[in-house]
Amino acid sequence: MRRVYADRHKAEAIVSMAMLCLKRAEETNPREYASLVLKDYYAVLRELMAALALLDGYAFSGEGAHEQLINHCASGELASHRAFLQQLRDYSFVSPEYVTRNHRRILRIAMLLRKEIRNA
Image 1 (cartoon, rainbow, N blue to C red):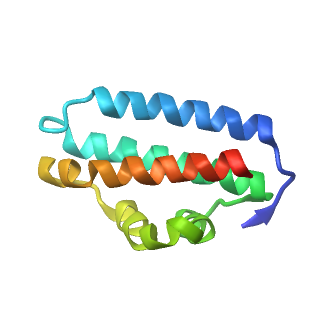
Image 2 (image 1 turned 135 degrees about the horizontal axis):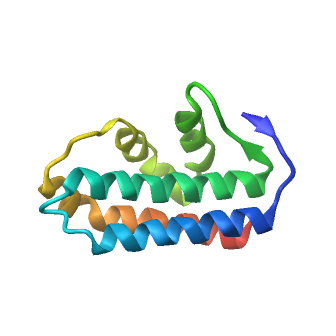
């Protein structure tokens, strides 16, 4: 973790890219490509967390960066999702049922992150 200057313009660009990735995930058949859909969902959440951290004046890179990013961002309403976010980091291959079962939760977390970004 390092301190950086908060950059709203860059954070908004990151959010825009994350929303494109979310659109792709939503348009991909999870029965056929479950692991790829989950990978896209995790990328969306990771990018939204990176945008939030940037607005807080932090950037994460190197060994353990994703874990640190999650720990930094998972507070308040997001605190109850910390363990789930940490699990997503480790999943490579999942069943279509896993994606279906967690779809709403992932979208809820994305919504909460966007709310935090708007309020930052």
